[in-house]
Image 1 (cartoon, rainbow, N blue to C red):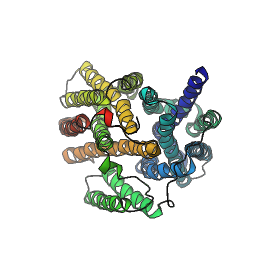
Image 2: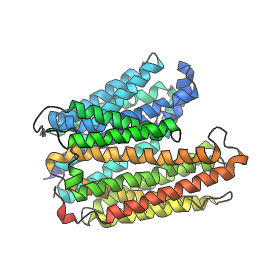
Image 3: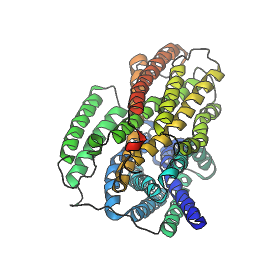
Image 4: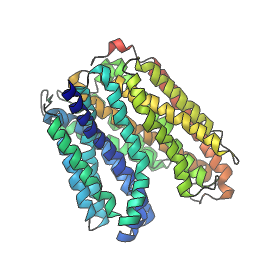
Amino acid sequence: MAADVRTNRLILFATSIGAVLSPLIGSMIVLAMPEIGVAFGVVARDLGWLSTIFILANAIFLIPASRLSDMMGYKRSYLLGAVIVGVACGLSVVAPTYGVLLVLRVVAACGTSFLMVTGLAILSRVYPPRERGAAFGVNAAMVYVGASAGPVLGGVLTDVFGWRSVFAVMVPMAVVAGVLMWWFFRDEVRFAGEGRFDVFGTVLYAAGMFCTMFGLSTLPSLVSAGLVVAGAVVMVVFVWYELRVLSPVLRVRLFFVNRRFARSAYAALLNYGCTAGSVFFVSLYLQSIGQLSPVHAGMVIFFQPLIQAVMTPVAGKVSDRVDPRYIVTGGMLLSMVGVLLLAGLGLETDLQYIMVAQVCIGLGSALFVAPNTNAIMGSVQASEFSAASGIVAVMRQAGMAISMAVCMSAITIFEGGDDMLGPEMYPDFLEALQVSMVFCAGLAVVGVLFSWFRGDAAEEGGR
């Protein structure tokens, strides 16, 4: 038994490296962008594609990766993801042009998609139901660690070794994750099902997701709104098609026949929609109205993900013994309180007030993520683990996109979007902040309803 526990912990360590790679790859690049711009002669506007293209590609690849993982096997898929990430990041170190670097960002996003969907699926296989919450908590905490430590680590590496080191450091991490999984996860798991890979469904999903995500990220222009509408229409066609195809790329039927799964997934979407934009606004507030330097503002912002990283494993472990509905609903309510507190920011708000709001959001998110993931993975059969884990990741990406779309649209509407954030713009900025946070709190209200009325734990299919 001791050997099994040790093996499971090493597998958990491997999946945790995979979990931290995606946010690291996405966030470490932020402070390296100016140096990359100088190296390739790229203007600031186009540098934004380094982050945007990775997020878009990641969201698009997640669902096909979950289906391919079923067909290829969890272990092979995880190893494939580790190899793709390692090769893409290694080649990024010697990228000759900015265009090549962008292409390699897309390739890296494909690799992290395999790591993300198979990581949760593998943990669901090796850990019994009574221990999954704790494992999911550790896995989710690593996402917060990557997201919070990424900018700091990327800045240090860029200052000391140059921007190419930001990609070089990913290579040994991918190698370690792959070697550990290859050595300790002995049994391959496959659920190939009937039929071939659903190419047409994949194309529909990719088109719908691209239009929706890209449109949301560039709102509120009419073209962007048109893209969102077009994306929504394509996604409706995608759902209609997937319900009729023999071997769908995404088991959308889960949303119609499994109430606990569907409502838990909707709750995840709305939770990220509630909280993701708060970091963006707090960062701007601290460096403008708060008159803090980027370093001091970063230290204040780091407080929130630190709480999430520490408390998420604890919440996950508790959800192994208590119906996740209670913990998740309480967490979302706490996040809603924190967001509403941010809506009360003014021109002379004390720093302590902001930190109280961050505690509420950080603790609320910690109480939500792992228990809700536990509820989602516990509500499906073993053959549906990879599909469910892919949906968990997609809901996170889509929720964050919705939240940022709300914030950016509010800034454009109230400030105009073209002027620098100077003292004369502070009242308009505060109005945009307040409207955005109230709207995001409204998303949480709907999420609370989905969370509380998701169904009893006794209905879970995986338990």
